[in-house]
Structure formats: structure tokens, C-alpha cells
Image (cartoon, rainbow, N blue to C red; front, side):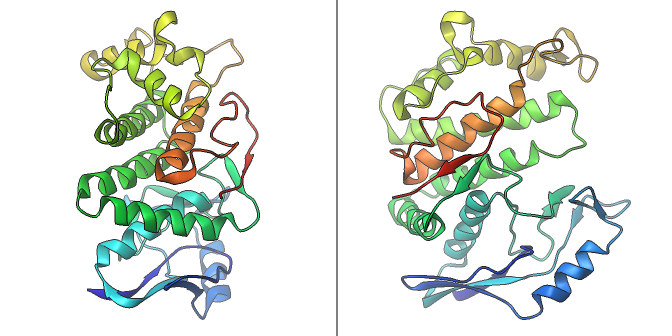
Length: 285
């Protein structure tokens, strides 16, 4: 049991009080930021693992408290959700970063929080925890979807690697919704349309079963045959010569589904186009 948890790395102050769960900035933030910015691990605003390693640590910059002793997992779930809504990997573990993480918030999602939406996000995370505390897989799946979404955005990944992570994130969203709702489809071709239709997310052409559900057709040989776009993994790129960025649009769908799943289904953001390359305002109620 615990009543507080330190986490990081966030390079700017964050101080909120939401019911019994205050979030505060720890002392020494400026020194921690300077150390990271001067590190040889930083390249083009991304922090990379040291040479010869994949797992690395960053300084703890913030703390989340609870007025009561609660499960450590409870506070850890809030850190995952806070990372998603701020668009930056946050971790409470000793060495909680894999390969690379952005220096600044807002890099790993495609929305900008408006008004007091960050406080509302903490409230939604608490409600999701309480609703699923007896179904721990639903909590783990949300964290897993966020983690896969973040892993997919490593600047050094090949396109097929990002695609696999993003498809995994979509599958995690599907697993959550399958447990929540009746009538889920059994085949991959129908899954993304079913999820988008339920929450009103605009259906992208690459997920439309009437058009062949391109991502399902791309997934099968990628996972089961080692072929991406008909070539061994890494030797071909999807969308060459077109204006479409499949991985970017998959990120947009995953972000909208996660916002909807945790309780923001009625927001304008969830209903917004997934083909935009611009960040979109998200106002949580």
C-alpha cells in the first residue's frame, strides 16, 4: 500500500489538486532539466538510451499523492494516464524508459488539452480505475495500448516496426471494448470499423472492410509470413508516392479510441478527422 508515488521525467512544473490526489512538482526541477538537456543522450529533442543499453532511467520530477493508503498499482495507473494525456512517457519505476522518449510533452499524442481538461483527465482515470478494479485486465490493457502507441513513435523505427506496434495498440483497444460491449466481430477486417462506429470516430479508408480493410490485409503477411508490402521486412514502404501516412493516421485512431474508452467519448476531438496532420484541441467535460 502507498499514499504517494514519485515519477518523471517532465521538464516543466505541474501542480494540480483533484479531490484526494494532489500532483506536485518536486524540488530541483531546473537542475534536472539542465542535466538532461546537457546529456549526450539528447538528440533533436529525443532522449535516447545510453550506448549499449536499451532500458534507462531519468530523474523523478513530480509526485502524486493520495490522502489514503491505496494500492501502488492505483497510483501507477494514474501515471500511465497522465502520460497519455500529456503526450509524454512518464514512469515511476527505477528505470522505466525503453530506447527513447521525447524531451518535451505533447510529442506522443495528437491533441492539445484545453481549459481544465488535465484535471478532468485525472478524474476520468480515477473513474476508470474504480469501474475496472475487479477486472485488472482492463486496466493493464489500457496501459498496454498507451505503451504500444508510444513505442511506435521511436524516430529510429522502420515503418513496418511502427505499424506492428500501432496494430498492437488497436488490438489492445479492441480487447478492452470486447469486454465492455456485446456484438464484437470475430475477424480482423471488421474490428476497426466496429470500434470507430461505436464511438463515432471517422472511419479511415484503410480500415473499411468494403474496401478490403487494408491494415488487416497488411497485418497478416507481416506477422505470419515476414512480408511487408510483399517484401521481406524493412525492404518496402507503404504509401510511397502518395500523400497518405498510414502510421500517422493509425496513431490518430488509437488516440481517439483511448480518449473515448477512458470516458471522453462525447468530445468533439473523438469525432474529428483522423487524416489531419495538425494537433487538435481536446476539451474534456
